[in-house]
Amino acid sequence: MPTSPLELTRAQILAFRRRVSALDERLPRGARSLRGAAWAGLTDSVPRAALLSIHARVEETRPSSWEDPSLVQVWGPRYSVYVVPARDRAVFTLGRLPNDARRCARAEDMAARVHAHLAGRRLKDNDVQRALGIGNAIKYAAPTGTLLLRWDGARAPDVWAVPPPEIEPHEARRELARRYLHVFGPETPAAFAAWAGVGEAESRATFDALSASLTAVRTPIGDAWILARDEPGFREPLRPPAAARLLPSGDTYFLFWGAGRELLVPDTARRAELWTSRVWPGAVLAGGEIVGTWRRAQAVLSVQPWRQLTRAERDAVEAEAQSLPLPGIAGPVAIQWNS
Image 1 (cartoon, one colour):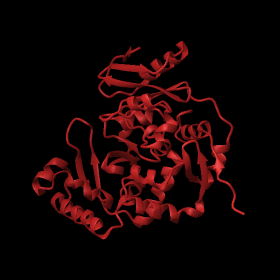
Image 2: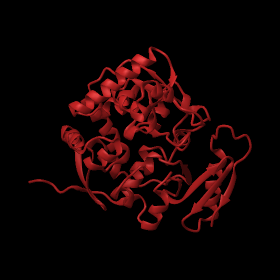
Image 3: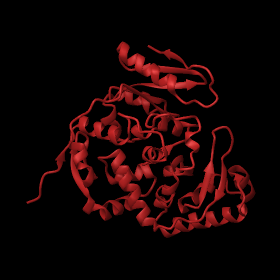
Image 4: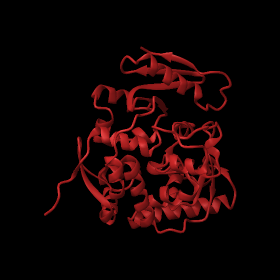
């Protein structure tokens, strides 16, 4: 007789996500912790967002931590700039190579053209685009796993060619899905497709291939899947959350679309303030809940709380703000409370 899906509450889901993302307790400084912080990749399309995501998860983060040799930048899911573990480059690139023969050929042909022009050099991506007349289509080469980049946010990124990963694309995509489920779960094939920027048919095929290692669950927003090995973690007793964390725009913790946002922020009006139609603000996490948004202009950090914060909560947010490893900011950060 088939068993009923495992019932998971909102509190269990959010506690698990915070725990596996090291948002309740920071990891010790080091390459191993950097890999853990970037297990599902860190978006860096907003300059130095990845650095602030690392700071939220790893102790003693410095302005240069994102440049650690254990990390690299790639055009990852949805062709966004990502900071990922160097040893896992294939997961975030080759794992997105299309199954469709035409689209796969487009990626490989673009990579061949770009590599031929680079000829072992490290060039600005806009120089390559102009020389080849390809514009932003240069990103189509990214899923081959043979391009790396360095973007500091001020100028066009440098790009250079690297050898192809020694892993099959379907294996890379399965690992990408496993990492997605571990950090974002419970989730569905449709949600994975939206996050990774792959076709829904490809996403469903990947989940089917992983079916023996998945567990069906029922959540407040519908049925979904988790990794079977994560089930004990969801069942763990709830632990005290961190007092506060300042999560940058596009941070993994709130990188959701559709129904996934409802679970994280139940209030419809507040969701519109966090997931805007333009560049998203950062999220203020206090006591395990998103309680507001923040933005920064140089050394001034503006905080928009969604409720009246306690004195202890405000102090915790201000302490986080003062500890941000902001490149080029020598003095203390000024906090502006917009409430």
